[in-house]
Image 1 (cartoon, rainbow, N blue to C red):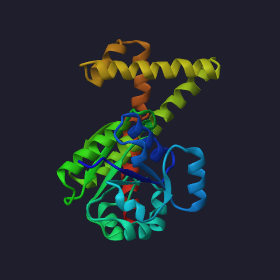
Image 2: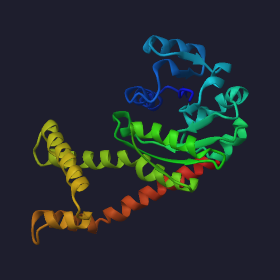
Image 3: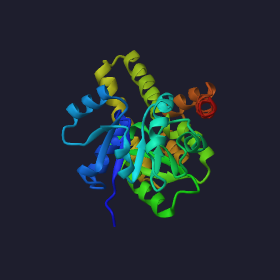
Length: 270
């Protein structure tokens, strides 16, 4: 069996996170991982930053790679599509982690059938991400499992037969970390208003978040049951929850997430 060879086009934070994860878990040999730059200036910068990895611009050399991971910004796809179209081979699998660009557009602009879409999130940078992904019908099952194994290198992944659900993935987990940061920020601000310094408020809130996550993740209880375990009748937690409910906090959060889903769908049609 030929060794797996991976080319990564677009080496920003997420593209490099995948590159490091592939190497860390020995999913690809270092000589078989290619960092692809859009232009010569970026190519030189990558060569300086990663002297032990092959670096190249879009060229015929890409035809030798099993998987081409496209990690450029969605607005830059039009700038690289023609170059990719000229060198892609039918047996290659193109995996896009660009938000909002549907597989139909990938197939059309790349003149290539074997395409997949994946939506990772920021914790992938730490190997703790969650990635939703879909595949065109032309992608062979063996290739699909191969790509799934690659995506799992940055955390966990979930396959979705319905590509349309990737907009919901974008809203729930893709944008999700920002919702937690927003809540942490609000709790820290409350702590400071109560008299704590910024550092002490930060320690209290972040450690509470960390502990609460691990308790939720390891418990067989539902979120409702865990809330009830903390919120004793007539107590402090109940007072806070009552205020949250009067302000429709849950409804506002749900509405915000639906707005993110709607915007993801809009981006796909722009």
